[in-house]
Length: 270
Image (cartoon, rainbow, N blue to C red):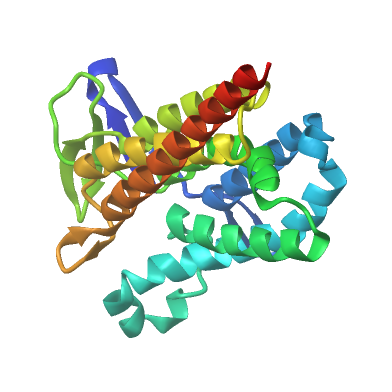
């Protein structure tokens, strides 16, 4: 049971992590929200059937592999940076139901899988990624509510009006609702990328802007996070986000410059 409050709104919630049980097996809200986010993302992909010459059927075929591999890689990434705990509690490594998925691990696993599948199907990798990433953003936006239910992915203590009250180790504290910050950020990214899809100027544009916008937002949010994955005192997701922002910015500038150069060459010929 999670006790979560929003003091400024006089709102106090007692939320059970378990939604219901089937044959004495507990089904957690976290799992339900993750599944719902995947279904909604696929429905959005379905509406874009044929985009960049790629059928939704192909995307669906890919997702049969991408989804489970992304979940597994997200878990591996999370476990790697919590290795002390899982070394002492190995039975918890496969306990996905209560949380513990790292988005960057999922992105890495999903990206590798898509590259392999595109190579086999002779599909342009950047076209495929540009088709998918807006749906990834909305899935992230929805999925973060699983963190809310679990009272995790929260921030450092604050007295801002929108602060969230939680109990940690029996102690009450008021913190930044960083899960909500990322929910809002990824929803905005989804809207921007969806509009951008209609007027794509180069292959990989949607993907590179996703990486730039999400990386920028995540780097800021990680600054406020209190439960970040760390390595030698360094917040891993913040470091990865900064690297992602730099690489995607270079990619965008290079392609925009290349487009301008091609336009100038064409105009001179005319």
